[in-house]
Structures are given as structure tokens and as C-alpha cells.
Length: 487
Image 1 (cartoon, rainbow, N blue to C red):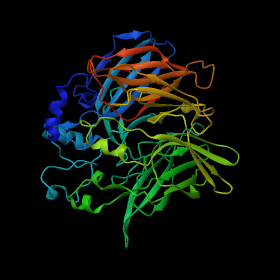
Image 2 (image 1 turned 180 degrees about the horizontal axis):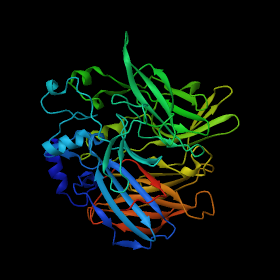
Image 3 (image 1 turned 60 degrees about the horizontal axis):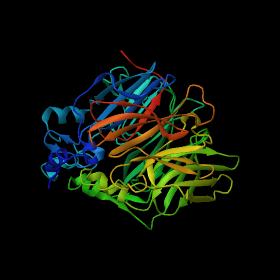
Image 4 (image 1 turned 180 degrees about the vertical axis):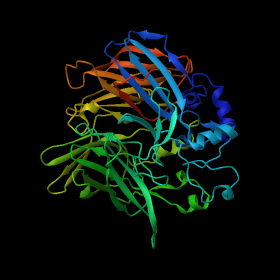
């Protein structure tokens, strides 16, 4: 069955989580009138979410989840009420695909129809579909293969690419996992960029940026890399940025010649150690490098430092299973997670110790109290599979006490599946992690989504849920701000 036929087939299924990947074509803007429970009066702010709003352009399907056009949704909470709006990011890719009703740009796992002649030397498009952030009075949608797109926070209208002064240009990239430093208010971020040709092939580098709120006076450093890496996220402490280059290699010959996609040339080398890089943010220079056993690191949780150590938590696996399903979301049977690990780096000796949280279930999409970013925090919140329901998309919230190792599972409900759950503190928190978990949950039995608000101290307790009259396609990452943006 080809990709186009799968779209039709999935749309006809009942109670099937695969329908959560189907498109939401309509753009909404209005108050939510259907709420289960009572919205907390002290919950004020906006939950922004980003993800592929569609897996097709007209009758043609995208070949990978990473290639669908970015769609921003915004749920605003104010005075015990909720408002919802969504809008596609008007990138050149979206505009041309939408106008022509077909796939007009290459992607990470998508080719233009017509063979290598249509794809040779064609750059990969930027769908702006991965992250979203409110920083320096700018709302931006991110994709690590290009520049962010700035949006109007009240209307979600696309304003154009954001280059942070002259830090970026149309040929450079920045990741979708920038982090806001809680003390300086700066955004710490990075990009992987090609820097030229050498006798061993294409040369590339890791560019690390310290971006002030006004976008000017950016401090940057460039770190040469020995290969085109897989590097999606990083750890941030008070004074350091921690990077782990996974044991993954990309062969660029086929993609450049237009014969294959980049995703088809992703290979895991089980003999290749992971490279660790520590950048001192005070000097913007590499202060320590180290090696770790072969593996794949995708997402980091929180990181912090003690007198002598850097400590960072991240999800790690030694299997490419977590990548394979991304290229065929309408056939996947179980969305794979990874194990949460803690890495300790001795700043004096360079010695490292990597240990798994033994009793923590596998999962993904970690979150924490971002007021504690770079500082020791008590809990890591992430999503996984409920015991006995290890099928389909993620269907439970996991709360891990990173100090004691104790963890709890919270099933989101029968035929329900959840994207990333974000933490926001209560207006007057009594403890460090006294707050709410906010998550977009898809109900496969009704093909609608709801925004659940749960007590972070007791996730079994659903405080309220905003019931939408439509679904929100499964997405990647979000951002919560205490600001509200309503016309």
C-alpha cells in the first residue's frame, strides 16, 4: 500500500491512534465552551504547541513525520476560562505545497516525485514544525534544519525568518531546543552547519550561541566536528552547556545526488563512542571533552552543577527503533521510548560516570520546572506507556523523583494518547514542584483532543480538561508562558 492509500485507509478506522497523525486543515480562533471540571483561577498564561499539522500536501503524502508543515496551537488560560487558536507557519514550503496541492520541496525523509533529476542538489526544506518559544517579546517556531520563523503571538500570523541580528543567515541553522537561562534571561542555543570541503569530505561544525533577549550582542563559538552528526538537544547548567554527539553517521552522497533521503542514510555505529563536549558559557570556549560508550541521545532533561561536578539527565538508547517508525507513522504499532540516564562529569579530572535510573520506565519528551533550569530540581516529568498498554502512541504520564528514584505512572485513559506534558508552577507554590501538568491528549474514540490539567504533585488527579470539538495532530514540543495574547 503506497503512502497516499494509507492516508485514506487510516481515516476510515475507528478507535485507532494512527488517526492522531491525520491533518487538521482548519484554523480556529475562539473561546472553549466545553470544560470537564473547573479550570484553576491561578492558572494564567499560554500553552504554545508545535508539530506537523498535516502528513500530506493534497493527495501526496510526506515520507516522514519530520516533514509535515508546522502548525502552532495556543491555549490561553485566564480568569478560569480557556481560549484556543491554531495556525500554520507560512514557510515557503507550506505556501507552495498548499498552492500546488503536492509535495514541492524535499525533506528529511521526503523526495519530490520525479526521481533524482528532481532532487539533485535540492536543499532540504524548513517546515518550522518542531519547537516554539517566547523569548525577548518574540514568538518563534523552530526546526533544526533552518532558521526560526517569527510569529505574531496574538494572531499566530507568520512575520518571517528570525536571524537574531546577523547571527544567522539563510544558509545556517539553529536547533529547536534553545533553553532560557534563568539568571541572565538569555537563550542558549546551537546549530550544526556545513563549513566547507576537505580531503575527507564535507566539513561541519557545532555553533553555540548565547542570545540576549533583544537579539543583539550575541556571543558565539564554533567547534569543528569530524563528521555530520546527530545532535538534537543539550544540557544547560548555570555556567556550562553540555553536548553529546551520538554514535550515528549520515552519509551525504546519496542525498546530495538526489537518489536517497537523509533519513535513509542514518546509520548507527555500535563501535563508535559518543563524543561529549562541555562549553564554558562565561568564555564561550570548550573546557572539557570526553567519550561515552556507543549510544543514541535525543532529549535532555534538566542539568545542574555542584562544586566539583556537572550532572545532566538524558534519554539514551542503543537501538534505531526510535527512528524507524518516524518514517511510517501510519503503520507503526508501538512508539518507542528510551531509558533515562544520569551523567556525572568531574570538572577537575574529566572522569565521567553514566548510570540509568534503574526503576524508571522507558519514555520520552522530558519536562521539569523551568524556573529551576540549570539548578538542581526534584522531579522529571515525561510520557511513556502505561503497564499493560505498551501499544500505540504514548499513553501515560511518568513522574520521576530524580533524588530518590521513586516514580509513578498515570494512565491518561482508554483510547487516549498524550503528547509532551509541560509543567507550570502554581501562583503560590508550597513546594518546589507544586504546580500543574498541561498536556494535549488525543481521544481516538471520538477523534478529538482535550487539554488536560493535572496536579503535578498527584498526576492521578485531573483538575480540569478543555474539550475541543476537533483533534490536534500529534506534535513535538511546546512552551508555557505566564503571558496572555488575545485580540
